[in-house]
Amino acid sequence: MTEGTPKIALQNVHKSFGAKHVLRGVDLQVAKGESLVIIGGSGTGKSVALKCVLGLMEPEQGSIKIDGEEMVGVSRSERADAMRKFGMLFQGGALFDSLPVWENVAFGLIQSQGMPRRDARDAAREKLRQVGLGEEVIDLHPAELSGGMQKRVALARAIATAPEIIFFDEPTTGLDPIMADVINDLIVNCVRELGATALSITHDMASARKIADRIAMIHQGKIIWQGSVSEMENSGSPYVDQFIHGRAEGPIKMAIQDH
Image (tube, rainbow, N blue to C red; front, side, top):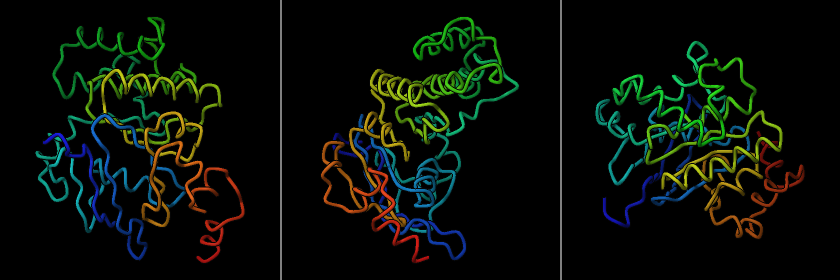
């Protein structure tokens, strides 16, 4: 990878489900060490774009490169190599109910890296400390934790393997505004400490403003605007303006009525 190579690059990515054309030529680049947040309403293609980058879905057309290496159409083993660079915070936390907290956090260390369980427990303890959780939670099960604590555990798991790229899928869903702000702060700090590249999707504008270096808006399967958080406030795009201020009136409503 040369210095100027984007960490993540999507070019003309298309994805359909039957007659439903969800991604209609997505172009997007994320620089090394950058935090990019994709915003957009429900059903605009945010999650599908993320799943294509993660390799959970294969686009019909276009290119997705990680560190300059093409990911579309590669073998399972080649994809597995790229996946080792990834950490992921899923929307619902997606913790394993049957495992104690420390094993949830250490899952990747034990399964992917073959770390001995005692060492993995120590590593999990350290990651939990980073997200503000102490010794008292280490042997609890996810069901015994509040929603905010579960989200912290999920974040600790996402950073446990020191990934180069972390994906955040609606990281503040289901949290009250104060806990959401705490999680946003933790995300910013954890990404910065790792020097990681972050790609997030959210419709929570408070979260987007806090964790993004740059924001891209997706609408009807295309990136229609991108820029810094400060530029977003005066984007000149009626779509962006309507979305970030949560207005009922505007071009997005018209698009909904057209269907």
